[in-house]
Length: 158
Ligand SMILES: [Zn+2]
Image (tube, rainbow, N blue to C red):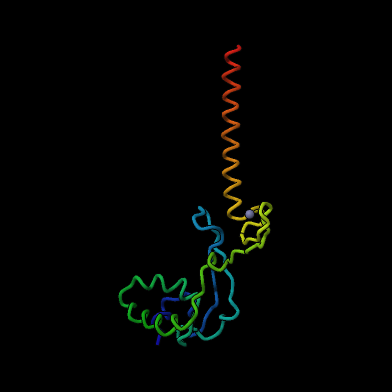
């Protein structure tokens, strides 16, 4: 039932079968020169087209569908494909969401309480961190004031 979506639209569709030629851009998004990387997906190559079987195809969803969505005569079919296929399939998450921040269990060097953080170099718990920061600021201000005093007294004697 989804033949119309792929027969002329998917570059991998070949007589009911999939060529399995995958591609993606290597390098960071926004790079001026991005390389096109191509490879053959053996799980798809030479097999019956997934879309025509009413199955989820990551290549179709990621590369073919976005272009088709702009064309009006495909919209009904696309919404059907989405309803039947995509919504029943767990959508692959974008990569940055997949990364889990690792939590480190550390002991505070000041008060000795245990705390969790994603920065393994941290020395103090949240409360002490704030205190230490405040103290450091105070120290820095004092230093700065002292320097001013030295400078002014120096300029007086000179
Ligand atoms: Zn602490």
